[in-house]
Length: 386
Ligand SMILES: [Fe+2]
Image 1 (cartoon, rainbow, N blue to C red):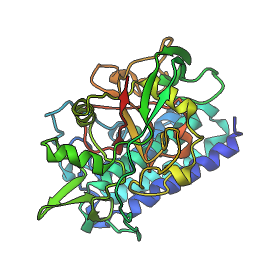
Image 2: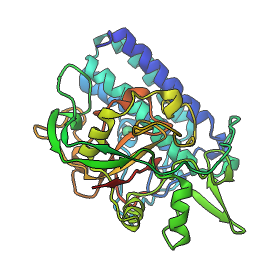
Image 3: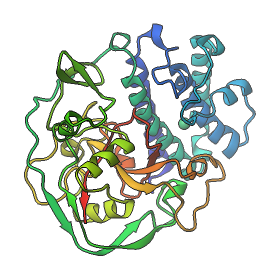
Image 4: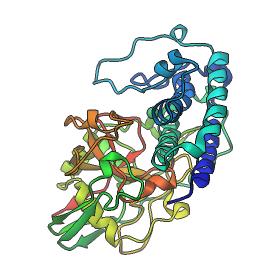
């Protein structure tokens, strides 16, 4: 385990990561709501500090609140069921100056307390913030281009996808979750355990835009990240649109991934099958596999090699597994709502990592989950045949 001072600098680095994201938004656009099912941008500006304050100052150290109203207002995000959108308007939210004052004071006070904070809670603060560095990126993805201050980003060259290949995975044990209580993981990563998995074959690569395009031409659902202009397909990237890169993975919903797999006479992997495939794959490498903030958008799928490629990086991978607790699950007492409300049969597990996933959360035990129709996330898939 890193010493608290290392975690303190991890928190500083995570703050830089999220500060950089807010700097990409034009100042006149901070009350926009790019995704109707989520709060507006101003919520996230206050949320990251309010979360740390509620966890560290209030829960861990029982310090008195200096702004209880903001502690509550910015405490939690939302995940409404389909069709039930939030109704608040920009005037319901405080001014930027007030939020910035709250944030500055929170950071200064938290920094004074760091030595007294249990390590587990510092890990939670760091990973919570880095998770938002990803979820806020996909929210910003949907902010109009003219409202963003884009860094220079090159579009992928775009070639044809490599030939589809499958890798045989023999029957065997998959180990899920974390075994040791001394490694940091979120509540849903415990308890670690093994399951037996029958033999199957899994695609070397994620399904590419080019492969999915054949499905769209036969009437398949159009991915949220695509746009058709005068008969040509474009990818709606983070900072610009560019011609659909056929050899990059396609971002889709779980429902679209399932439909495509059925159309091909195949299926999605289960969470346990993903772990089996990952156990034979080469070790993840952020620069080749595309995670840890290396790129904003996908890079081409791998060419060559006999093993499953880019299992960690270049887009989360949908599984067929409904998000549910592992045996022995206990919610964190300081964050009971992290996982438990989502064990409702309405969310599916994703594995791997996206271009905007921090390296610490690219660990094999990390579990992500979303509703099967939620279109905004950086989620890909690969095929399995029995
Ligand atoms: Fe949060």
